[in-house]
Amino acid sequence: MVNIGLTKVDDALAAKHPGLQSYAACQSHAFMKGTGTFMFGAASLFALQRALQKKLPYPLQWNLLISIVASSLGSYAVTRWETQKCSDLWMLLETGRVPDRSPPAAPPPEEPTGPSKTKYGDVMD
Image 1: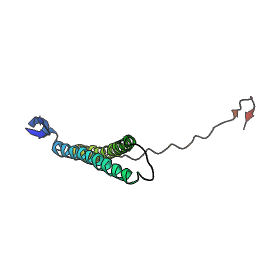
Image 2: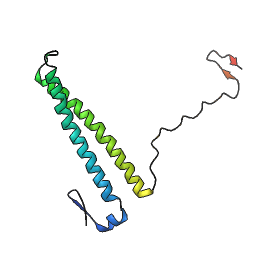
Image 3: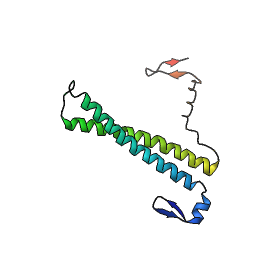
């Protein structure tokens, strides 16, 4: 049996997917990195806002709200980025190649082939 967190994975499934343990470790690391980003970000922003309290006086509730919302957004971004890297690792381990994440090239604009009509009924050449 292979352990992934608290879940035990069958040996047959683990043998079928040899990169499962690496992928699980990567995902665990991604989630911990996101959690750490949230905690460090919230504490840092809270401390920064407390230091600036003399210049920008506003209630403690807003200080907490801004700190939590901003650190949540940062944590989401970090977790999503790291999870994407884990997905790429999984694809590499399963297929042997990394997926192409570059945006697709836009097709060239089509050239008109013949005369066309304007909205007034005139023929354009």
